[in-house]
Image 1 (cartoon, rainbow, N blue to C red):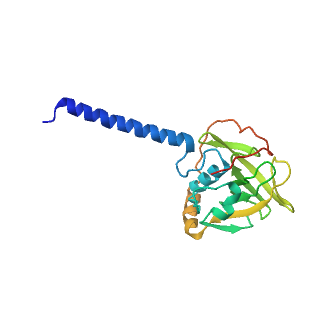
Image 2: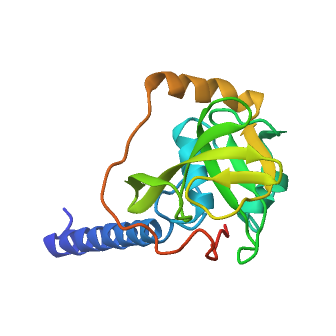
Image 3: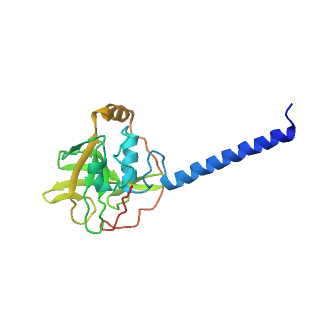
Amino acid sequence: MIPRQKVMTSKRIIEGTLIVAALGVALLLGHHGRMHSSLARGECTWYAFERAHERGWNIRFDKPYGRHARAWWEKVTNAQQSSVPKVGSIMVLDAWKGNPYGHVAYVESVSGKDHWVISHANFGVGTQERTLDGVPVLRARCERIPRGVRLEGAMGSFLLRGFLSPSAANRSASQDLNSIGERRVVGEGPIIGHSANAKILNEG
């Protein structure tokens, strides 16, 4: 028979291990938010990745670093590149003055090749529609113009690198989720405090 004191000591060790493990998970969630990627919670890259993941597309990169928004055009390995927006694609904007990282956003709807609607984070243009893990998510209309793309509520225009769509291997899973319907995460939170021309830290 195992002595009661030894049993109690073993129980305390197990409980302590579980507490440490729980704290580790909490700290990780606090830094990265959802654990689908190591992208920093709150960045436009984090949101675009999470939104794509919601719809069944697990975006993959060639390397786990240097995943700035504009670099997605070269670094995403399971996507098709296009100049035409599609529902479920990722819009990739190039760098502009004050923001060397560019911007990525998720295409929610399309009205022809020159008009589409995006949802995005960490760029204060458009109308807030929800929060995701405490991060404000905004929806904005986009229009293609001769010198680039104009975003609802933004000053000037932006250079469009193009659109990334799920490759054939990911498309069926994404379509299955689309038939289920959009999962909402509702909450409250302030709009991130920067203007349309402010510097955005879109580093993965």
